[in-house]
Length: 160
Image 1 (tube, one colour):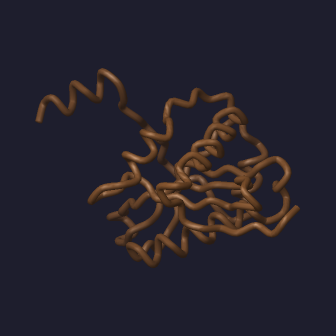
Image 2: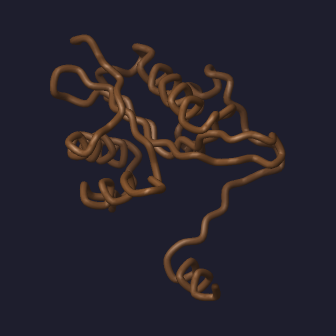
């Protein structure tokens, strides 16, 4: 494999990021509703919804990570929430996943002084769980992830 470079995603690279995220959705068996326009809209403006890094070899994406700021009052510091991490099948086992997370952590530290990393992993994704275990990530005791979307979210925001 050619040399892999990890770099921030600019507007011109959104189609390549979209391709990487579609591959992740396919790997997970998830629907993929975000298109290039949605990614561009979310990544720009005064308060971007996410930051992204691409691992590129030649003109092909070998990996990607999407992350955003979060804050913990328990820890008393800002962190980064990793919403998506993808490494191509050909690049798995090469250290690229660790490299992407390291680059995201360093960038988040520079941008908003992040001091911890948080992410979710699917219960049925043993390979991903093993990878995160080897990195030292651990379940947060007594916590579980909850979400509110669609009509419920619309109703709640309508109460403001």
